Structure formats: C-alpha cells, structure tokens
Length: 422
Image 1 (spheres, rainbow, N blue to C red):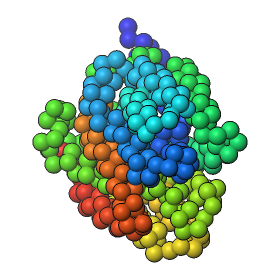
Image 2: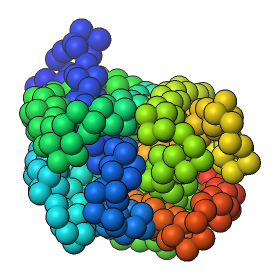
Image 3: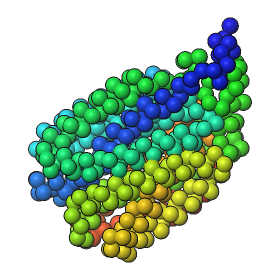
Image 4: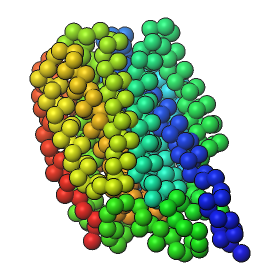
C-alpha cells in the first residue's frame, strides 16, 4: 500500500520548510559573497593594482556570464541528478574559486577565478534552489519563493559592511579565505548536505496544497499553485518559439540590467559624490534590507493578486528610484532611492520563478528556467561592464543610469504583457 495514503498529511511534519531553510542558507552566503560583496572589493583592488574600474568590473561580468550562460545545461543536469547533489558540488567549486582569489596578482587571475566562482554558483545556486522550492511547494509557492529571495536580500544587507570591516581588519586577500570557509560550512555542509531533500515524494509526502492521495492526481494539486489560469505546458526545447517565454526573458533581463549596473558601481558612485566607504556600503545594505521586504511582500500578495500586475507595479517603483538616484545627491534622498530600488528588485526577482512555476509544470521547471536564465545573467554582465566603460570614457555614471531607466521601461511593458503560454 502507498505510504502516502496510510499517514494523513496533517499528522506529519511538513519537511518542505526545512528544505526551504537549507536553500535559504545557500542563497544567503553565496549571493552575499559572490555578487553583493564585489562592489566593496572593486575600489580596493583598483587602488591596489592601479587597474581601471571597467577592467575590474569585467571580472564580475565574466563570473555572471559563467553563472548564467550554461543555465540550459545546468537545468538539464539538475533535472537528472537532482538539486541536492548540484548544490553540494556547485558550492564547493565556488568556495575553491574564492580561495584562489586570495592569490591574485594579475588581472587575468581575477577573471579566471571569478569564472570558476560563477560556474559553481550557477550550478549550485539559483536553479537547484528554486527547483527544490518548486518541488516542495504548490499552494504557498509564491510565499516560499518570496522568503527565499528575501534571504538573498539579507545576504546583501549583511555582507557589504561585514566585508568592509574584514578588509579593514585583515586585508582583502584574507577576507576571500574567510568567505570561502563560510561557503563550505554554511552552504555545502549545513544548507545543502544536511537540510535539503529533492522532492516530497522521496520522503513519502506530497507538496503543500496537495491532498493525500495517489501521486497520479498531482496535476489537480498543481492548479492550486497561483491565482492564474494555467495553460498547457511548453516543452523546454520549444520554449523560445513562444512569445510568453520571450516576454519573461525580457522583463527578467531588464531588472537584471538595472541590478547589475547599480550593485557593481554604487559604492564607487557614492564615493565619487562625496560619501565615505562605510556610508556607501551601509546604503547598499539598506537597499538589500528593502530587497528582502519586497520579496516577502510580492510572495504574500501573489497568493491573492495577479502576478503580472504586481510585477508592473514593481517596475514603476524601480523607475521612480532610478530617477531619484540620477537627480539627487542629498543622503536622505539616496536612502529613499535605496528603499524603493530594493523593494522593486526584491519583488521582480521573486516574480520570475513565480511566473515559471505558474505557467509550467514541476517536471519542466528547471529546464524552462535554464532556458530563460541566460538572458537575465547576460544582461547583468553587460550592465556591469558597460557602466564601467561609460564612466571611464566620460568620468560620470549619468549616461549609464539613463540607459538603466530605459531598460526598466522595457521591463515594465514586458512583465505586464506576459500571459500564460498557449
């Protein structure tokens, strides 16, 4: 007899929350060390070696490309070997890359090691983590994703000032070793190996929102996933033939472009207009805190309201924030910008997996995300390097931020237009 039918679900502890906690730890430490801390290292490394900001920012761009460009392959591998193994292998590789960063003496060292980190973080980060969530949650999927993305924002809140203090106390080389150790202990051992399990079916359970009964009836439970009408699923190999996939790729790329330009260069920009390094890092932390609030808010509201409308509102918030950034220099307005920008990016990063989970079934989730994700990371990489190049050529970030505003307008239109595939 099927064990799922023997034990009422309400009498069992739902392990999905523990699996969620595991991937939250992973995204907290990997996101905080890989992306959110780079802006703190950028001016320090430039001063150490005399390299230009564009040259150093290229390292993050290469890392982000390595993080996302192989995503179709990552999606296939995650589907085959399971997200837990991918998390363990990927995070170990990312930690190894950070150890190597402590040995940098040439610019190509920085590029090579950041590519290694990007490959590890890509294989053991976003795709397997959200796959775990998508496998364990149906009725409360958007809320679980919101909590997960909020934890990424928490990493952005904690790590910039933390890394700034570490660099001040120990130097940037030792700081990389400390961050690598944190990934091994928190990301590999505790988050991935101990807490994460691939699917509820592996433990004789069903995802939340599904009633006890045969697994063959799972499609009925899938209908609980979001307050939208589901259309027939699209095979991942045909995904790019569908307008909906292009619209989802466009809105995620637009948001990633804005995030890439701002996260990479905001510390340097704020120092340029007169703020000290710790104030600049603290401002990023404020943005990250509101990023978490935006993720949680979107995840909660998506249980009741249309995700297209919520995504559109998030882009409006992003446009207002960017306008303030370009026009204002007073610290109080910078704080307002950071709050609005954080709210918008938190919501929009939660929106992408929510859209995919709503429009495609669980078995295809990782593959479809793997198809869309390269657009997001390429946009983030291009934003980081192009903003640095514009600054080197003009001595100002004004043009770069104007391009970011244009991309956000494109994102607003795309997100609001994305409907279930037919």
